[in-house]
Length: 393
Image (cartoon, rainbow, N blue to C red):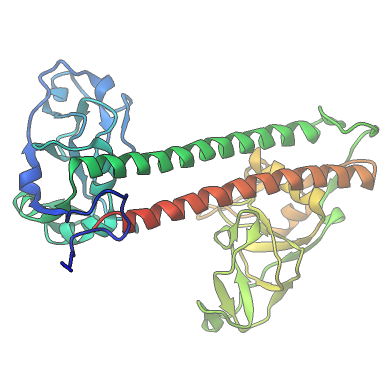
């Protein structure tokens, strides 16, 4: 049997030809076409997010004539390096004809192509890293594209029919991610609104919304009167480890994710301990993040541990959502909350434990919905990442 090499690992049925090797110079030409003045500031495209944005500072209409035209299907090089894009990246215009700053290198397709296929191909770090490593040079904080070197680089390309299949499929996956992300944002917005309505507003004694059967005024109390507080104390730096060791170390909101402690650093030194179920509160910038711990952990100086129930957890979230902690934080180098201010922070408490439990259970279930949807989105993103590896060469 004939051995085929230039084919992707994952492929739609009906396609068995090898992909054709082409130089980028056979696919694109550099475009230096300037705006002739017919396209105004409303047609300015922000390459980083691929959006029309007119909130840029432009001194005169004449200056807009220094901008390049950036047509549907054109690609532009953005040289900023990041974790995702080591040598910068190309972005395709998939939103419509516009203009971009002359600081970008713009290339225009010169062959028949599928818009969606090239959107994913040209922005694929797995494919493009080897291309850009050979056609860019490093400068301060970014990479500059060497046009002639780029146009000489080789790239494997399928037929138009296969391009269309791949582009349409990946576009559908993106649509699913976007739809679920929009739903997630809506759920979070609803929760924020409910938090505002299910807890009394400043200066009030009862909430705007309340479960049936509960009445009476809520009481203002100090957080330290309701919860036992333990301020963190960092271990000696020599005891830290990035691989699992004796204790998980939590030092700030970077160690909390989706409402829970996220193991990231370990230590062998036991300073201040928090126990499973404790609430972990960030007292350093950005202040106010709160999570729970499923483990026995060591807490460093950036956090405090609170022995509080689900009701207190949700009220702390509410206080953070509406900026309470920023009103009591201080510090010139970075914001922080000291132990006295945390202890004396005022929270509202219902007159009965039963109402606390009802509110806590309600928001806990809401958090579960948000968490489940976030997991679906993460799974889809992982699937897309795998597809981008297996459907291209």
